[in-house]
Every structure is written in C-alpha cells, then in structure tokens.
Amino acid sequence: DAKPWPDGCLLFPQRLPWIKLEGIRQASEANFEVTYQQEDTDPEDVLCRQLWIDGGVDDDGAAVPGCWDEDRIIGTIPTGLTRPIYSYVTVDPSGSKFWAIEWWVYHEGTKQRFLVDLVRKKLRAPNFLGYNPATREYTGVINDWILRSEKTKFPIRHLIVEQNAAQRYLLQYDHVTQWARQHRVRIIAHDTHGNKTDPDYGVMALLRPIYQHGLVRLPGGNRESRIQAQYLINEVTQYPGGVYEDCTMSQWFGENRLPSLVKRQEVDNTPRTWVPGWAKEGMPV
Image (cartoon, rainbow, N blue to C red; front, side, top):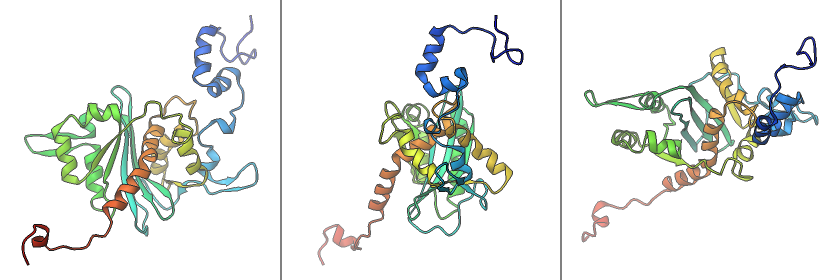
C-alpha cells in the first residue's frame, strides 16, 4: 500500500518480480544497486570518473590533469607533434542500432591518444563505405575521413572493426578491398568475444588508466566539439552499468590493437640499405 514519491518513499509504485530483478542484478551489480536500491555509485565500479575528464583534485589530494584540449576543435589534429605518430579509425557497427566510428591519433612520445573525430548514429553499410560502379566513386563516412587525413601529415593507415561486423560489412566486398589497397589502409578484424573482461587486456584494464592520467585527449575548443565528445564521455563514465557502450567498445578495439600497430609500423620504417636493381636480380657486374 506504499505510495510513490512525493507522497511516499517509492520511486515507482509497481512491484517488480524478483525473477526479473535477479537477472538485472547478475548483469550488473553496480547498476542494480544504483537504479533499484538508490545506493550511491562506487567510484571504483565505473570505468572513468567525471573528475578525470574535467580535471581537478582527487579524493586523496592528488592533482588530476583532465582530458580536455581547450585549444582544439573536433576534426583537427594537434600541431607540433613529433614522429612517430599512428593514425587509425575504430568502428563498432550495428545492423539495427548505433554505429560508433572514432578517428584516433596516438603520439608515441607522450603516450597521448587524441580523439580527432567521432560519429555516433544509425547507419547502413553504404553510409559507412559505399561505391557507385557507374561513376567509380567511393562515398561514406570512412572515405571522407581518409581523404581528409591524406591532406595532413598523418594519413589514416589502419581501420579496426569488430570481427563479425568486418566480415559482414567490409571484407566480403571487392570494392572495399580495392578501396583499402588504393589508400594503403589495413582492415583489422578485432575479436571481442571473451576479451571484454580480461584482467590484462579487457575494457577496464586498458581504458581506465589512460583516462585517470589524462592520456586521452578530447577536443574541447567549442560547443560542437564538446557535444560530439560527450557521446564517448557519457558511456565511459557509466560503464559497465550504462545503457550504451558503442563508443566505449570502439575505443577499446583501438587500445587492444595499438601495441601491434606500433610494432608493425616500427618494422615497416626500419632503414634498409639501398641495393641497385641489377644486384637484386642477380645480374653480373
């Protein structure tokens, strides 16, 4: 007979069966305690605290640098970065929900990851990368980003996509292979299954430290930039109990693969001694 707020203590007057609540509790203990028991969120339970985004002083009195670049807007790369630089795009597609597409630049010297651009919306595969056989022209978000990146010093060289989605939306099409070859882009399929909660390479293990130490750099130079970055912020400050995790997963794909990208590029950039063509072919002197 208890009445709901403001006449009583209940937030919602309808009783919920335990068989339903038990499933919710098992999926996320922290989310259950906050939503259904009105308990405060334990800062240790979330991937990223809002304080780590905005900067300030932590509970133990330590200074937190924050993640905002006040002088940079969405779609731009910081100036003055020294090589080596790694430019890559991460994608978490969906057949019926939102796609999360993120362009990152990793600076090896400072270990900082710069979010250059972010798209989170419902898309069809051709909206991501389409091809018109009549005009032989490519269209879509990733094609636009590639063309933009090629006008900078740091062209996108890697496209990291969830494995099942890569097979479904990209790797099975000839025009995608031709496009990747034309722009020298490697398409890397990331295996999500069973890795999200890995204590060493899972979402919390890889993303939490880089946010805490300000190694994730977000464009905050104007209102539009902050609105776009907020899609990612909303998710990482609620994970693992949030409603959405598309942007979080997309970023994690890149972090999980980053060591191999760095290692491969170091090998590709190894200086080689020049040898004349006739020597390569075994021709006599």
